[in-house]
Length: 179
Image 1 (cartoon, rainbow, N blue to C red):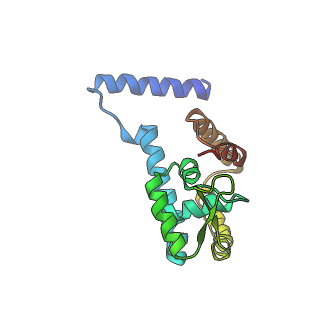
Image 2: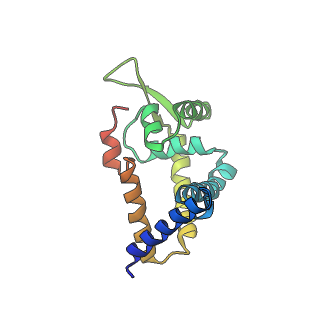
Image 3: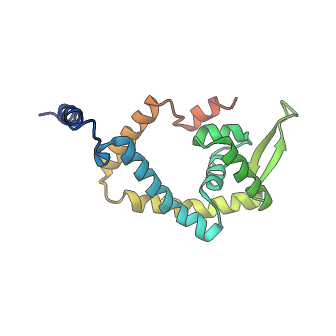
């Protein structure tokens, strides 16, 4: 039986079982639960790299990571949109990063009422030092997968992201600059 068909049969069987069991849900087979749990564990593993050494929390890292892949300043709203993090959380992270002089505000030349964000030299230095450590940690996490499985996993994640209209590329992120 083809894998795709097998998966459909399995999920169909689970639905039938759920309806026969009074709509009970097996969390360990429920994809949203599994993805959430996986994301939390991966995030915790990565955050140990930037929390212990650099004193950054997850929202602060998200701000630096977003600013780090860009060539120009951007708005806090843009960071919130790309990272799917609430704007108040991003605002608190920006304030903390500004206090540590890792991020600075610059006036938007197109709209002087708006400020944009960019990393300072100190912020860029921290970012550049941290990236190899995070990439190494990512390799460690994915080391249980073969090269082919990593490629397939990336493709599957992309499909799910696309179905949820999530920004997937630098180019798409630039197109949403209006945020």
